[in-house]
Image (cartoon, rainbow over all chains, first blue to last red; front, side):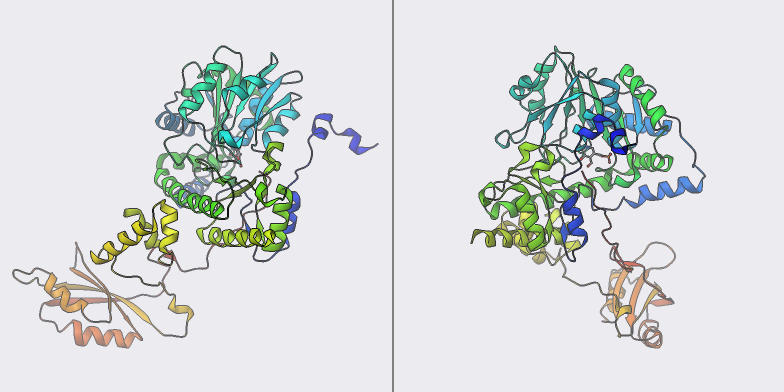
Length: 389
Length: 159
Ligand SMILES: Cc1ncc(COP(=O)(O)O)c(C=O)c1O
């Protein structure tokens, strides 16, 4: 038997990650600074960790109900109401998931299959495309543009819609660009979606990391509530990546469909993490606020740093990434990142890892200490100066 | 203003330029604000938190509960002043509850601290009683934890 022949064609179709090689390189280096990983550098706030420990002491070590412990669902319901003005019934309009990752996966699996098209704005989080392809559906990429500040414009959206379009993935605040969609931006695309049978999977995992104004969920706009699945989680806002916990909210019929997959494939999200998450929503606001303020300061330092090096860098207003353009150096994104890592030991990620239209850009995360950010900027500047000669 | 203080409270080694960038302000604005804060005695000074345990210098710290009789017209302030002017006194607070002043003393040895209490503090006319507690181990001070810093152990993941 040829083992490789046994792999499903849909899985074969997805190439292995192109950025693995950087991680292999950096693992062998001393004094390297990684602005590569997209997760908070903060450890989970103590009050949340403590709640997890306490739940273990009390013996909450069993499966929870499939949809998640009811206290948590009630807290989520209150939270999305208070933050985004969204009303979801904890009983039949939400599932607690293994991170936003699971939410994205089961949303797609519940909705699409071979013959369907999913509109996918890029550059974006690497998991979307893989998850779409695994279902057998076809990803239809929309290339976002720097001149639009990497926002999804009605023009670009309209051009991508066909009569097979079933889902739009709306990834804002965006990884890797840091772009956000304001209320006005959203209204423009809602005009196009209003009379069409398209479900929006809105990945709002970075919602709390919005630096000017408040995050607005597309689900809160007229006509969009029924058609939107809101995917969110605790990883970024509460620095809880390792706990693997998130949630998805939406129309009861959509949730019921996703619930089937969740129930058979996952059972339930980790129970310890669920109790910790309850604490995050009850008492985590201040901790979250402190982290956001710190990210905001680092964000300004990074943008300022790249601009002073002479790189074009639009101002990202969300998430924890900056996405400067490196075309003026004459290098490709890959060359830039590989040489930078070898010569100055700073890891950033080539923009094309997040979609072809990311070529010419690089992603640097400011989820790192201010000290490391200052040092990394110094090294990148040195690298660019050298490359001019 | 407030945010400058928050930043400096955590790290006073940042330059005015760096703080200005962090806050999206001009260097001049930040410089002027800090100057004003210093003049208004809102910023009292810039100190360094040292874990003396890890050096060869011997030190002990004691927390002393002091009960005093307040003085007419001056309350506790005058008594407190007579105490906090000693350089050995690291900190001095007026308290609610079972005693009046918390006095934190640093000395080379326990004996030195005990002598200070016996010879300087206790004999003061308005001091009624003292209770001395020696610090055995410092876990955290000024919001900073003494044990080794948590290392960045984030693993490389593709995202
Ligand atoms: C845009 C985006 N969505 C979802 C996730 C996954 O989040 P979670 O940890 O909740 O699975 C990430 C993680 O990097 C992300 O960047």
